[in-house]
Length: 91
Image (cartoon, rainbow, N blue to C red; front, side, top):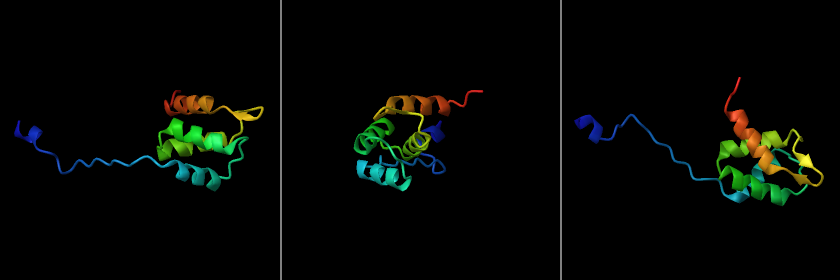
């Protein structure tokens, strides 16, 4: 059981800190997203993604489709729900 008590040098754990909110704003501008209320969208995007770059990218790609704009508001919770469903890779 000695091998269980020693750390394995072959296993590498990568911990990335979450992206700060200003970088989320830069990412939204880089993708040329047009949303009704950009400041609110950026804040919701950061809140829903917890700063995770992969989630930010997938949420932005879904928002670019334009299916989530209702009136003068972008439905970010619906956007996140659809991202979660899509990540399940259901048949």
